[in-house]
Image 1: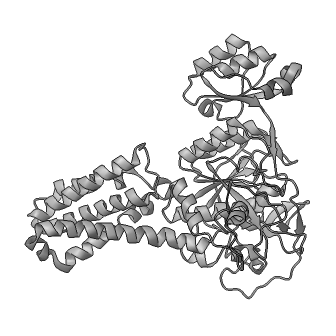
Image 2: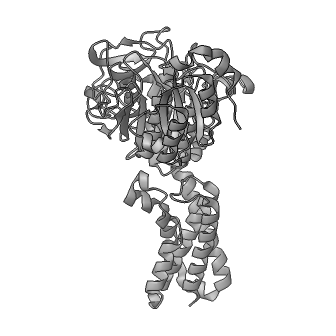
Length: 537
């Protein structure tokens, strides 16, 4: 049985009833069980958000330590803790941009793009030649997002205000809108500046007040809400020094449901990464400046996964990250600095990678890390380097190239290997297929692109396209047509190669399937057998 920690007893004492707590029930607990617990302990459990019926997160005031201990010990409850506040990391501020605009650019034609040194540092616009994040929903869990002048062409999806419990998730601070601009500022529209994944969609989730702080219950509810409403990437440019079991559970929930969770490491300049960035299921982001050194304020430590531009306006006024936001009473362009600014660069690149077909969160993180680069002129100091940069500075162009080329080459190779193995058994029959068979085989090897083209990013990983079902149906329908057998064999072996490559490459989170590896292996073997059966006659 779980027990209440000494920290609770010492920190709360006789003031237990004065503190609001978060009660996080297990996700599969029935409403009747929640009501029974409340009745037994004489508690009034209030929903923490509009989605409480789904996430089972409640708020309460516990009268005494005995009731607190009883709650903590109940097997239907995952976590009980004080409803503490997280906030925008300290020390973040910005300056108004008054630089002369450049109207000579062709692409992107945003007149102030030349001031965005931070996008050049992550190798944009070279990456845009390979993808722009089309169709990927990025949840901005922050102070809200306002549709300022340079977000007019950016697509938004429905969000929620977890501060006021309404669907009005406008920004009354300026931080969240600036963050959203880095992710998906309207780009090549002849106005202002550019964003990393400008064809991605923004989901505004307001969890922080106009003062820049919000409750852990609201943030955890927003994370789960984003995962349950179609977000593929979450950005959290917020945090606190202490871990929260409720929020940690929510981050893991989102990750396990196919969402990449990206978080700012914090601005204390200390060797301690803030939460939620420090959770294993999150990508913790450190901040760099113009010269590619990590900034004076960026937190560091073993949990740092990767680095991205966060800026430094102390060194020079234009040394920050430039985006459009509503700040200090005006809709304008401001240089901000902070790990809050670094995190959305990673969220944007994650959206670019996902739009290229890599949708498994672990695969996205691995790809971002393996394609990251060392800072220019950096001496080889492995230990210290990793603590401050993680895998290195994110490289959007290298990440997209690896996402697009690596998987395709592996799939064609796997399909070809299967075809050669079958040809060795068929001998003379296979010779009759000749070059046409090889050509159709290559078409079959390109099979994985079909589901994303038809169903979009949210439908990527559909079981229909990650099984031997289509080759089996084709065999049943056309086996009696001799001229169709070459196509049947090529399709089946192409699908087999696609499944075999995914078994190794593992870039896609297959929907509705818990045992991905077993499923892929079994269906790759079945598709190979179907191809052999089609070619045998």
